[in-house]
Length: 103
Length: 232
Length: 102
Image (cartoon, rainbow over all chains, first blue to last red; front, side, top):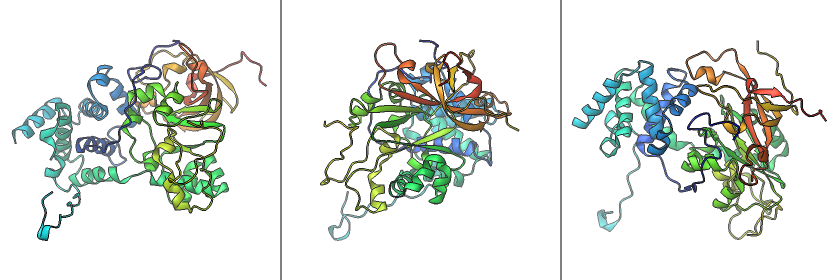
């Protein structure tokens, strides 16, 4: 190899796994994340751009590819970005999860 | 399903659009810890006025509404109108606008399959995809396996989709690495001269426009006779 | 005012081996590889800068570059991809003068 991968997302030629071609519709939790990203990055808000979003996903590291699926990686990347930009805090998110659990 | 009045099975209730906060968080209990973070972020963003419940509902409901139909229309038009096809290959965004399909700010390149060259699209680095034309990307397009493999073994990957290319066919793989998005213009099948444009559009599936499949004729038609494809 | 494109369709180029960036859109399989400019795509915000909170201006120039698959992936066996075409930003490319232009 002439050069090492630019990140854990640089997958060309790295795997031999079979491809699961099964069709399915997105679950609500996935559409929710898709919508949140779309709204946060739209012209009205412009809180995040596609490049920092991709970078945030790449920054999750290789474990994110083994331990989490596509929209879970999006969720974690959005969470990290929102915290880095002081739009939400880690504490508020944790507390909100607990609050909803307790309902 | 329980039967209703006079033993008639009731029609399933139509999916109601998400309209309130309860609906927006209705799946919470069935979620994994990471997925629950999504609900928490949603509620916090609403509380802070960064997004409204209406905006979220609309955005969520829109997701399922985009299908490959727009892409199919573009392909069918290119099949019946040679000058449109040339404009499509030169400036795809402008050509789509002729059909009242506005994909801006997406930058689109349409790649034509020929009798000698077969094209297939991938985004090895993430999952870039022209959603406005093709609808949602399938799981497999976003998968690590597809991204890792199709770029160097497209023939084998296409076989896994049931598509068999002849030995001498050239394969070009397009990696959507930056700002462009891609759509394959498949070859119009033989024996379709009598088909109307909307009937032709029905032959064009999402997978044909990614390049892992070729348009199939309705059963009862003879198979296409193109020298790219093997007899198997 | 954007700079003029450095390369024209048909020019031979080599992908540079730049030092690692936090975020880039030139995958490793292209680094150091020779190809040919397939088309000029236009001027866009620099993703490497936009990813880390910078403005992404001035715009940078983007090309599609065509490679032989076997030049990119030839370690274990014949590459099934005859041709691979990808988008690469101008600062990742240098002119390849090792061949006489035909």
